[in-house]
Image (cartoon, rainbow, N blue to C red; front, side, top):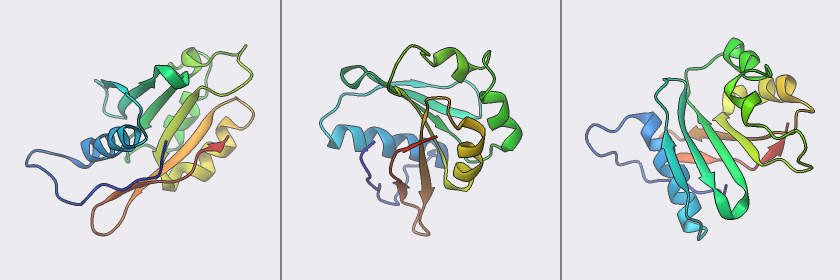
Length: 135
């Protein structure tokens, strides 16, 4: 994902999770990509963003998850475990998660062929994405 921030103004009824999703979609559109967004029905996943031309899927994870949730995602029968393609030489799956969880995510997903990318909010409310890292 291209690094980009979104202005702090939020439309009424817009929560911080939808702001992260809006920022992610805006970043991909700014990069000339056409993301396919599937909003999540669970509270811990914000959405899945598909980028068919790049053979890439990003899973946006909300701010209120903990280590136990990340550990469960590493299990083979989890949503993330089922989405991974073990025959692929390059990662096509990226977890986009709160900055506070990056260290733990590296520990949990090390060697599993995933990309990780942090997101965070500045004090003005804008959402920013870090660089993509191999787990």
